[in-house]
Amino acid sequence: MTPQFEWDYSKDVINRLKHGVPFSMAQLAFADPKRVVAEDVAHSKSEQRYFCFGMVNGEILSVRFTYRNGIIRIFGAGYWRKGKAIYERENQIHR
Image (cartoon, rainbow, N blue to C red; front, side, top):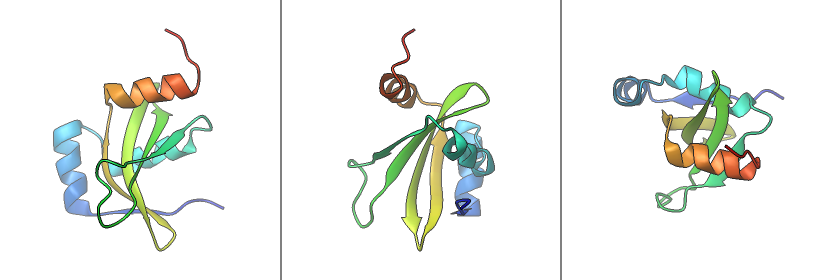
């Protein structure tokens, strides 16, 4: 079953300007068979939130998301060092 994605289009525009990543590209991180999903305990207030760290275009992309009615709702994405470090650690990649 192919996952379904959604996002707020105004947040997508803001994310593109701030981090250079459109949410349409961010959903590709979920297709990485070595992706790492972790709960975002620092920002989880009213709903559970998560990170997906996955390889996109040869780089590790960090995607912030939640599940709403069985749909993955993306609300942030960027190429962040911490996400790369987690991905490499979990996949035992040594550099």
